[in-house]
Length: 299
Image 1 (cartoon, helix red, strand yellow):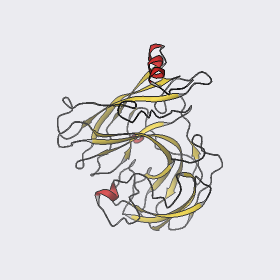
Image 2 (tube, rainbow, N blue to C red):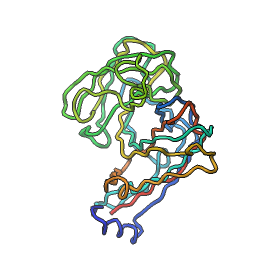
Image 3 (cartoon, rainbow, N blue to C red):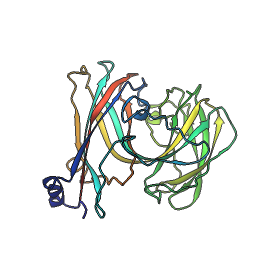
Image 4 (cartoon, one colour):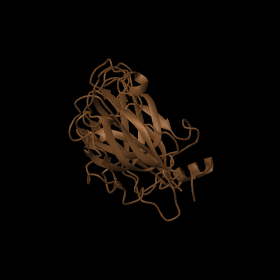
């Protein structure tokens, strides 16, 4: 069985093949316009997670229990889908107008990348991607973790694309950071425009995704320590939040994968490590809290 038609969706709800999982995160860091951050670095449920692991190698992520957004197991032959997201943010300032969100499946990280070193740092991958093993639609992102950066920087990295071809790409590191912030902006860190800062993934120069990363080298060292994620984006929400209102009055945002996402309900594989990247769309406004729920159906 699978979810392919309106009748499949209705049958899933009628037969109880659905689950709603609530979440809450508080006290996300204060960022400037367009700065993405990983909610994993905030307290709440799922719990704080600094994306630590064995340095210099790929650390695979498979969710166990409540270390990410939880969902029930399936019977053999069934497929699980994300059918709806309800998201509400409370701002620390009434002048925060909205928040953007990318829901992702974290496949793994290369942690403890040294931002003080200008040497090439070799990265090994001893295990394949736990999901999306062909790398299609999988992207890298550099997140500042453990120790904050000092200045803006730049570098190059090499990766194996979905087609098995090794490629090299340049990236920049933003000059403003806090732990849990996405640091990569583009090839030129001196160009601090919203478009550059708004980028989430590291630049690619070809291919439809990334199977692994083999090295990274800072040509201008930013300081700090970094975790290089490989992640699969699943669903986006825009203009979420208070709309310039106080936390008590702001609306929630509801996104149905069927009604609002061209009937594309992302498949959620067993072991998916689900989380969110968030960014404030107006000013250096800390997000006081993020809460809501995911709804899953299966068949």
